[in-house]
Image 1 (cartoon, rainbow, N blue to C red):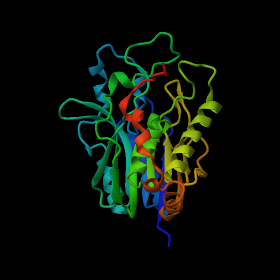
Image 2 (cartoon, rainbow, N blue to C red; image 1 turned 135 degrees about the vertical axis):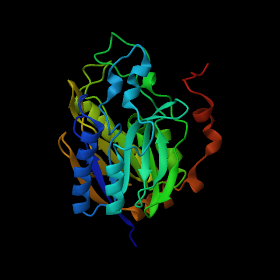
Image 3 (cartoon, rainbow, N blue to C red; image 1 turned 30 degrees about the horizontal axis):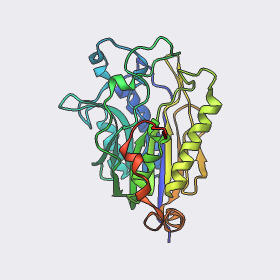
Image 4 (cartoon, rainbow, N blue to C red; image 1 turned 120 degrees about the vertical axis):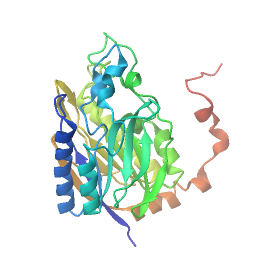
Length: 309
C-alpha cells in the first residue's frame, strides 16, 4: 500500500521592507491557488514568510524591531490565508516572528490541519549569528539579538495520514534536529529557510558551496532518519541583501526528488509516499535494534568540545 501526501513547497521571492503583511499574504494566496490546481494536500511556506528577513538590521533598542513580530496567530492580516486553506481543505505550514503575551520573542513555524486549525507549533532552537553589531562582518545576522532559543523541543504530530515535524533554517545543519524527530517516527520534516547567498564571515564561500552544504544537510537528515524533508526558501534580493534559493523535496533515501529553479514566487508540487519511509526504519535505521545509547552520553552531557587529556 501507499500513503500519498501531495505536498506543495511554496517558495517566496524577496520581500522588501516596504511591503505590507497584506501584500505578502496576497502573494501566498496566489501560490495556494496554484497548489490547489495541482491537487496538493499540504502547502509549506518558508521561514519568516510574512516579512523581510529583518535580523540583518541592527537596532540599539531591540524593541524597535517588534513591529516585525506577530502578537497573535491568526491575526486579521493573515486570516484570508487561513480561510482559503480551510475552503480548499488543505494543510498549511509557514514561519513568522512570534511575540508572546509574556513578551518573549521566537522564530516560529506553525502546522495547520485541513480544517484550518493550528495543531502544531515549533520555535527555532539553533539560532545562528550574533547579538551585538559586528563591524567585521560583510552583513549583520542578528537572530541571537531578536529571538530567544525555542522552548518547545522538536515535537512530531500525527496528522494528514502521517507523522509530521518541523524545523527552521539553521536547524537543518544539526543532526540532533532530525534524530529527535526520528525517534518519534517522523515521516516528513517541514523546513522553511532564509539563507544569505554569502557567508558574512567568509566572503569566499559563495552560492555554490552554500547550496552544496544545504543539500548535504537535507540528504543526511532524510537518509539517517528515513524521512521525507520538504525544504522551502525565501529567495532573491531583499533591499540589497541576497538570499539563496534551493527549494527542494528530499526522499527517505536522501535523494533529491524534486527541485524548484529560480528565486521568484513559485510552487513545487510532489506526491510523497509516506510508506517509502518504512524500509529504512525497519532495516539499517531500526533504532530499537541498533542504537547503543550507553555510548552517546556526551551528546547531551556537554555543549562545547572537550579534548582528551
